[in-house]
Image (cartoon, rainbow, N blue to C red):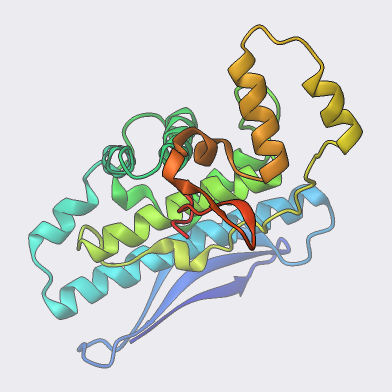
Length: 263
């Protein structure tokens, strides 16, 4: 089977878009279907180029849906598959978020943040059938240009990268669990991961910290311990005495398992 998007030139300088079918098993092997969409043949302004980009994305989304419909008919998928497409993606994402509650506090927090952004983006009800290429591209645009952090600042490059990857991971799980048959995220390019600049204190600055009064002494102790050992807060927080060890060759050292990486 071949299902392509074709263009037909019009007199006004635009091009109309239509679907071109080739169905080897069908009685009518060749079929054309107008999409009632138009693009500029030679876009001259940024507005015309943006129109072409959005229209072609929409056309590709329609093509993908039509392709799936034909595949369902050819392979005799049950009605339950079609029913799943009407299920709420936001509810499914919320369930996957809850599953991560006991796995990792940080990971759960990230998933929960994405869930809040998904609701702000399109509300609490989004059927799986609406989560297509265009929807995902629109969500990317939302993350990059509209979404705000808790401090009301635009999301960082790495937050966009992480949040969009959570949506892609959720869709992969939906395929594995046979909720959906096709993952539209495979056609959408994700964000690039940004370079992070790590802040650090010099030894002189740490000495000043050690001499500075703190209302909660154990908090200052934990901070200095973290800074001088390089341990994450989560690893300092769960550290127990038996993990602080000693040998004549090495002196005192710490042997423990990292909470984040399990290494």
